[in-house]
Image 1 (cartoon, rainbow, N blue to C red):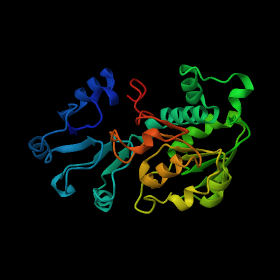
Image 2: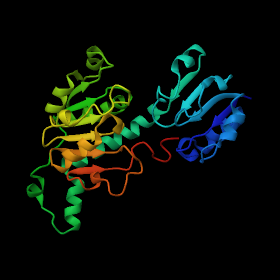
Image 3: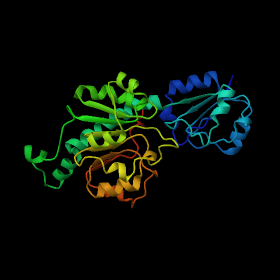
Image 4: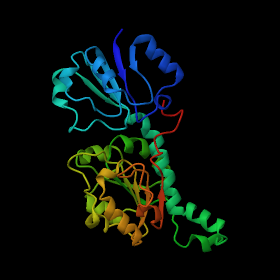
Length: 299
């Protein structure tokens, strides 16, 4: 049977495998390790010679040459391994497939993103907090700064897999969709019902902005203060994919200045330090990177 190094930590086994699927895997493969804790180096070293596939959240095993029989890398972290750690040219030459679990997380992440945006736009959490403090405002008095998603302009930064899951959820709201993605053509965006615009136009004109771009060398912190200052004061900025693409210090400062609203599910350090100022930012809905980790739906 083919040998598979199953080393999913930080993911948990029960998060990515149902009992039935794990049983099927053991029936067809020689599973090495397969525990919630990270595989010790000695286990990895012993598995290298025979490993047909590696299941892990990233590539953390050094030179590919030490895996002579490797044919597949299956990442379970939510994004393809970085080019800084994985030699994709070697994978191509040796026909090693590099596969990502990201499409499986897409629908649940999209659902959470939409829910958080509606929360911020309709001030659901703010209204709840006011109610628990006996400071609630009724009827139109409690809607002075809220807005609905219907017929609004929605901007997508990154029009890939996550956008593919989000678009069907947005269409019932009859929104005007605009997008910015340097890796996609205007024709492709148009085929998805999205108008291609510059990043600056998207930020300055959208009522809701979804950050869905995957990390790359080119887009690290490209959403800096200069760009973020373009966002309208009533708009909701939804940081959903990775914090890598945002200058998080600039974002935090602008939110404390009350420049716009935000919903955030991803952070530069996780767990986030207890004294991080984003925790007290006004008009901000925070989630502890829970959008794609729903037990039962991710297996």
